[in-house]
Amino acid sequence: MIYIVTVIVVAFLLYKGYLLLYGKQTNLNADLTLSQKSILENEVQYYSKLSEEEKVRFSKRVAVFLSSIKIKAVSCVVSDVDELLIGASAIIPVFGFNSWSYANLKEVYLFPNAFNTKLEYVGWKNNRTILGIVGGGRLKNKMILSQKALRHGFENKSDKNNTAIHEFVHLIDMTDGDVDGLPLSIIDKPYTLPWFDLIHKKIEHIDDGKSDINPYGATSKIEFFAVASEYFFERPKLLKRKHPELYKKLSVFFNQDRA
Ligand SMILES: [Zn+2]
Image (cartoon, rainbow, N blue to C red; front, side, top):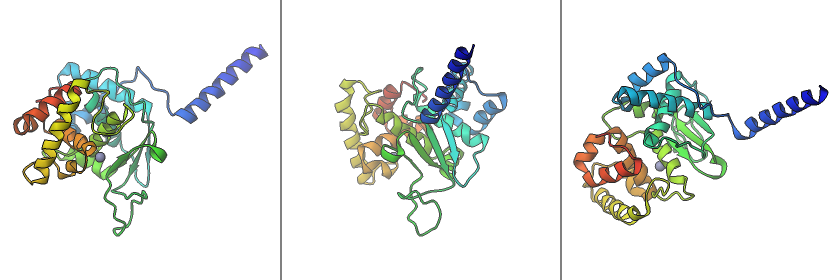
């Protein structure tokens, strides 16, 4: 009897230790409540345009994702809406891959506003221009988002920007070990050269002032991929009309055709 109790206690402590070290245990049976689904319907244009069957799959995946990460508020309060916007931003770019899970993410920190490289988020003199960040080193398995930018990304439905989706696309880019604008986890080898050629062409157009793509995309191949993906998910029809080749490629990579 003592032996069995000891085994149970040890197993429990190991489990608690595991959670402490590796974060939450993903609940594969999780699903959203009706009120959470109605928040998605009202706040997330992408979701509101899905078919009923897709909505069922989408909301389950958001719930499973949210069960797998911790959201930590820094000097702000995380609302139900914030939580769901983070979940939606995670699932939108991987909705075409049924078994995708973000193995490289455990925690999302929500800062009230923009921040700088020292992660300072107050003071107007501190050169606070960063709205979201993911990465290695001290940021391994972590994402930091500006709450204001997270909300703005979904409030403004006509721009082509969405900070949180942008950061999740960086995480997808990282899964093959390199952040280079070439996510081999979703791009097949024969596509790599044409993809880089297209990026070069599109960046040239941005530099020449002849593009409606966010100029931040011209800073590198990495940022181009993330910025073009924001456009793809926020304004698919417009992207298809203005940049048919880019739309086609992203549509193949993400296995989605929302236009
Ligand atoms: Zn970026």
